[in-house]
Length: 303
Length: 317
Image 1 (cartoon, chains in turn cyan, orange):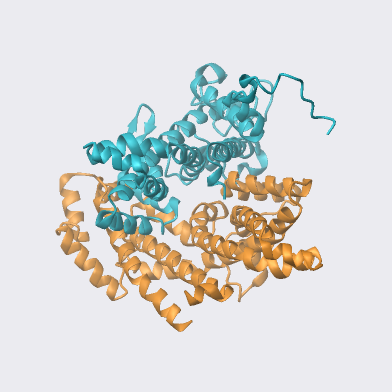
Image 2 (cartoon, helix red, strand yellow):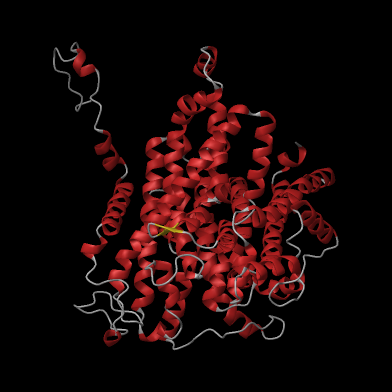
């Protein structure tokens, strides 16, 4: 009882009765410290990706046969690979590849999935049943299998240094997942009175979907996009590791690991350790941030 | 129970047909020419003539519906065509490699169950203590570490401390169990770790949910020990979603194996798939994709049946 003190006059003032709304950014930092840490790491990766030419001390593709397999030292922070290329510089430039492919494919897959899902849930009926059957079937393929088939059929199509077909291949498995989520969100929104009102006002289906339904599924959309970026980075690394993703000499984390063949396990462990750490940390950061975003934006989605 | 089984199996038929259709069109409808990719992979000259000749040879010059007809007829006869690379029947190629992958997948599942169930229970029972935090960090890191890198780390560790490399080449477990396990245990752990992480998270959250139920409070109120409440009353209900996750992820293990088999040089389905993809062997890709999807569907069926066994309520409805 002692810690409750009421000063006379304070109750009547309405300004005190309404609690001050805390700054949302500050609230996020305070309630989701792990997510905030993830965000910091993500920002660091973004900075590395954008400013790679200033951060990396060497040209990531420059071959130097006088410095092959150098252990980490003051000149080569994380050592060099079998061609004398600086591992640190390749990791920094690799962030560019990983983030570009990861973010683009996740955005692409989620956006397409959200639109298909919203349309499917909004119209219902035969279209809905058909789309859902296709989604069911697509979900019975492991994501890497779908991606590999697309990579195999499409070949490569680089645009501004990013292989667009690789992006498409990684995006494809995310489409059915997002479709399903967007559909279930749409189903509940489509019954809201304001949708009826919009229809009564004579708006077309396209406008209702774009203006009234899609904005309401922004929260799950953002959550899934962040979560999928983590998966996309992992998938790109796996594909590149298999020799099906990014190809030499472009620096990519998975590719760096595939170059580290058995001969180098003993002589150059840094070639194996650091690129893998870069992948793990990036995926970890996006997962953490995604989880916190979910808790923060939509407590109902917590499962 | 028999009615339940029959209905579930009948429901499979449309999905299986759908999978066959999607597999067929996925390879043919995507803009891009498998023949060109294959010719490039062969190192052959890519000219209009060679493309046409190759198309004719593979039956790809026929209209799509005719190709689909051939595909369905072949499927009905259990014939998935021949590998474009070796000329062997696709089914035979798959059958040779299948036992390796299946064994690793089963071992990974066992590892995952052995890790996830106790860890998940500990984490839920000791919620918000250091035990819980440690378990959660292990689980989250399991989702972030690429399985192939984990495999490489294990090789690296064994090589630098014990100067030992896992044997290359697969021997059947019935021939030489020791050599077999030496070759398969590390791939199983590296795939199983991620699997365990997913299952641990599910175990934890499912158990936490059940522990909030009224009947748990009743059980505690009538003076039962915590251990007994968890084991007898809570665990049985909490295991349902865990069984689902383990079942679902079992099929996705095949996906994990694609990369891990490469690290350990295991000649399984995954490696076959990678080889087929790099060589542009489209018949083989088609057969493998079909098989993986069918496994997924069958595992789903088994999960549903297990569900029915574990939970009488589902059987009835």
